[in-house]
Image 1: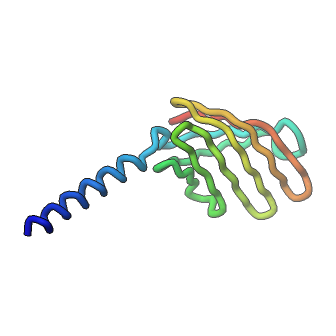
Image 2: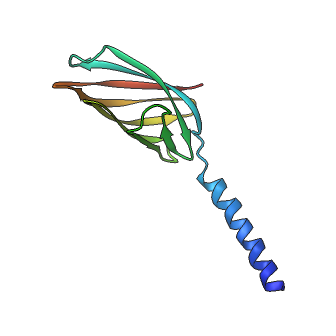
Image 3: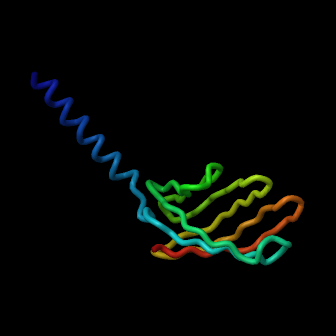
Length: 118
């Protein structure tokens, strides 16, 4: 009986500890602004994303992938119909920035992005 109780306690500690490790200091809602510097894509795009356990998500974009490492390095991509964009950058505290590139139909575009925690 003591062995079963000990295993249950260790199991609970592992679950609690792994959950704590999965949380990211960047978790929460972020507002993003994408600015086009080259190409004929829209001049700027704005939208919000959520970060949970280092995974970046958007509620209305099915083909959106992104992650943030513990050090704040960001990598993400999105596909909507004939449009695709990917980017890299870094978050630090409540802000971030990076570069992106992609296409809309046959138009190639690139620029920078900024982020603010809301």
